[in-house]
Image (cartoon, rainbow, N blue to C red):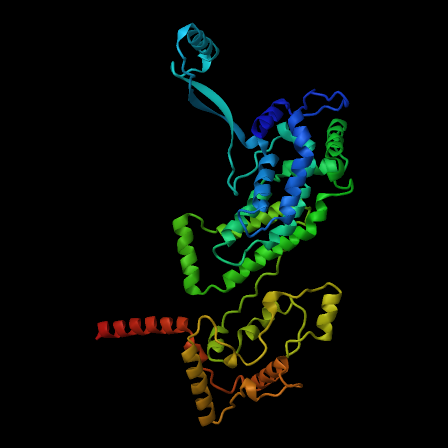
Length: 463
């Protein structure tokens, strides 16, 4: 039984963290695993490796999750605890034989008997830790980690590479995917990572290196190269961090005022205030010491914030959000021309590694008044406000934008060229026209209705 063998493995390490003196007849190196675990180690390693690499990650009944659960249990045998349960004693069948059996059972189980018909039985039980709970690894288990070192390294590299396939984009799957990453990373405490690095970098003591060498010999053909280090997981780890952080920022940016209020209220009632930011920062700190990332490593540039004072200009159509935030992101993204394309200086900044493209710094190309309908706008009101804006501009002799279908690019059907021409026209007339499209935003309608109600109520009360 694998559970019982894990319990026996814990007994082979004393409270002082020293390895047991159990030795194989063909090898004098001390070994802390019982024969059953030693024999199944290569096969189990291959099962976990193939399950994580080839299993379907979006099917929770696939081999990926079965291999993952087996792997997590194998990494933390110290989560097994001995529990007690009362079991009924075996009833007798009558006669002298049954009486002798009952007497023997009574004598053997006298210390563990709760009644004449029941006795106490101790059994090992696995207690699954929470994703946010810290690891309980101690020096007492250092020998076990060294005897299973590649269980802590190779499956981790496979998991970090495949974890990018998890769904971090939807509100329903984001917490589950985040919790799965937390369950894996929480195991790798600083003490455990130091033990692994000392063995992988050949800096451990003689006895530990002998145990590590015995583990590599037992793994046989499944043993990775001797030059493999945890730092080789840096690329996959940073890719996973960028995926998690970018999806979180996209979801956060897509939230309007009411969505943010709903999220905050849910956090208050669930008792999870500030969970998202704190969880991501905790994952970042784990990854930093796990794969030796720089302390000043930044996953993604901070999303640029629009300076105060430009909100009214944006609502009146005199200035775009991109133009309002231009002064903020100017020093964090490569230089672009008025048409949104990279300039020679911008290409040079990317080539030399001074700056890199930021997905949040991509500007909209075209006339914002003619852009497609947003999720927070009412389609019927969009067409109505655009028509009303054009009517006022014509009556007052102001400039009127040209629709996209009337523009001709370098080649027929060249959408980018039409957008660029549209933006060039907008830049010439942005400050000399009306843009009433902000009235199609249902958030502005609700705000205006509330203000009107307050004004009406105040005026009626004063009169």
